[in-house]
Length: 193
Ligand code: ADP
Image (cartoon, rainbow, N blue to C red):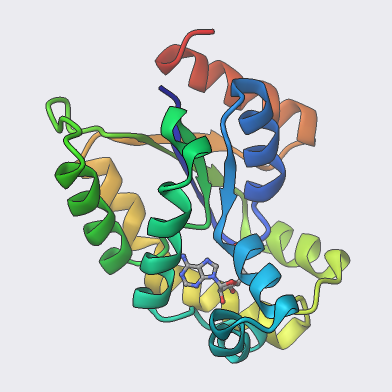
């Protein structure tokens, strides 16, 4: 069963690649950023609570995210596997998610309930990509804050998953097609198609 987490700084291409890989393996692409943006657009209670954090480039509080992901993963389509994009993003989220997987009966035998892909891209490339994207939270000041938040709160997850032997590193500083091929090659070793 394909279960992958896409890690990586903002602008690394997580969304694009996660969506392509999800289509390839026919599992849902679950992007916390997309779910949050839908909630903001619909002015749901979650959206109203999340909006200010997102506009500033700060993280939405863990508990809101954990509830949101839990609910999404209970959907029937997620029972045959999933690709998570943008979650976990803090050590607290990773630890709570670990407990949830364990409670769900998944074996930690080899230390891996799921695998984690880190897309590596240099900072200057990230900023250039984000500036050219033009999403509501892609203003220069917000971008700088998002990168800082990434280094403080999300980057520690690389060590977290490395220590648990769940981490796969893929070079994301290349053309979209080239990154997709590299990813498929890496993922095929775990989930041969
Ligand atoms: P990017 O990867 O380019 O930063 P995302 O679409 O993944 O963009 O996320 C956009 C915003 O949504 C983040 O800046 C943050 O405010 C919020 N967000 C998304 N996922 C999470 C998460 N797991 N925990 C906290 N906040 C999140």
